[in-house]
Image (cartoon, rainbow, N blue to C red; front, side, top):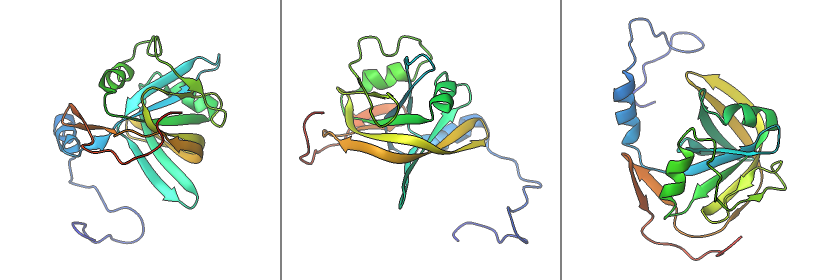
Length: 187
């Protein structure tokens, strides 16, 4: 294993004497990795839409189909996602920068003027019809609390590739994938 020290015994290696990098350094290091941009959506106990922008999305497994999303413990979407037990990962298409920025805030009116349809598969969680290059409809399969985030593992029970180049993010800058492969044009 590249870069790892041998473990003593079973379990995690000792952290004695090691000091993690500070928050600013970690953000700079993590920001060196370009990624796609997603908006994770769900509904609250009243059926009102909730959502947030995140880069913390990973296709985790194909058998069974699982994804991972990570939410900050201070997220205003967290309680709704825990309660609903389902969510939609909207993979944003190029040109959705304003929407990404809007959903990265803690504003209450994120969905004002945003066209969406409720997922039949994910308990009514919003599918962002004008911004999604693809969407994945998920049921919460597991929850892991670690550090200042809560990790949700979702079973992918539905979804669709809509088309359009995905929105990319690198060092606080947006870009679109340079070329699009043909795919479905609308929901």
